[in-house]
Length: 122
Length: 333
Image 1 (cartoon, chains in turn cyan, orange):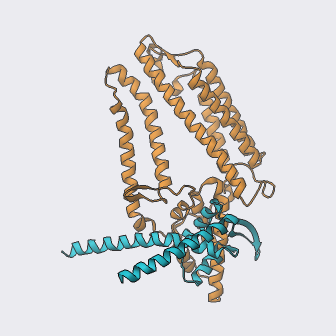
Image 2: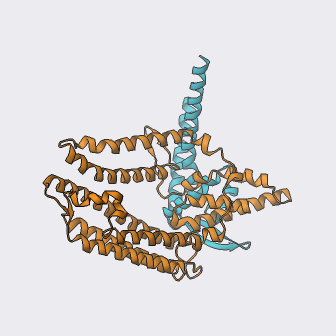
Image 3: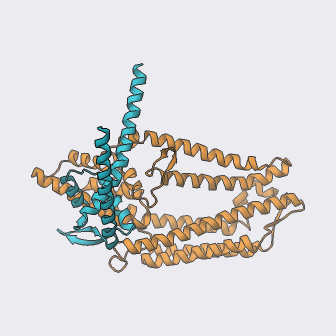
């Protein structure tokens, strides 16, 4: 009996972790694109996100920046700052357009979700 | 900093070659900033243990590198069975196993067909491939399940020591490459004259085997040996550091294209590789050779396309160029 409860609890936790991961994934892209309206390099971007309450692992953020750049949403350049070469990212022209569309989508979804949650009183 | 260098060295091992330097440079800048920030916060240099903790938090080098792989693919069947971090390694092992199995089958099947007529069926051909697929997939699914326990439990203190210039640099590796290539080319060039080098004592039975290579083979064999000699020359220049990275890549690519051209000629302009008084033996042997040549051509073509796309990506994204950093070809990190 105890074992069954433990397995059920483990599965619930695992399902929750997976769902949380899915929920976060889209939000992270939105947050990163928004933050890169101002130029940042990887570490300062991570710090800026953390200061706004969005902690993100280095091993998630840095490859994400590369992917967004490959998709044409970011541009980057190597530049020396404080005697060290750093790769600075900023939103590209396409990125600005996509960000605007994503923010519209986010607001629509947020409003709908707000109504649904109020109705079902979760 | 020694620990950071060792960590980055380990990450770089698993990164795609073309973007390796660029990614490592970026990681170095980010992690160094993080370390400096922490030192500023504490008002003192970080201890070894604190750096270890920071790197541990940054993640297992293999997982970190896996996230930079260009295609973030995975294997899913309802739930995700193999995640994007392990998938590139899964694909690589699977491809390697398939190639080895195909080569073995190409050698074994004609013999079996000769000894036991009717023994070869499509099922018997596909079974080893399916078994390979199943075994490798099961192993990687198990690895994926235990990934968090196994891969996250790693100790930065146990990272391999930093390779010195003499270990990692051109000398050691390129000398080895050159000697290996020289021995291989010599072996290949001498084999037709002394089949003992390939078959050992079995060479004594060669005249009794009811199968002969077609005379045109001499030309193809000569072309392959000539190509290997050119490759040897290229490695020699590389050994003396007489080639820039770009020149080395162009020469290497040219030789690969020449090799591919020989393979295509072999596959499409030269349907019969062997003759035999037994028609079924000749048919099976020719078919096996053809499969091997086509697989070789496909692998060669894939290699060329991959090298080209790597070079293209490196040109687009690389922080350095030959002009800024004229390093010899093949010197690694």
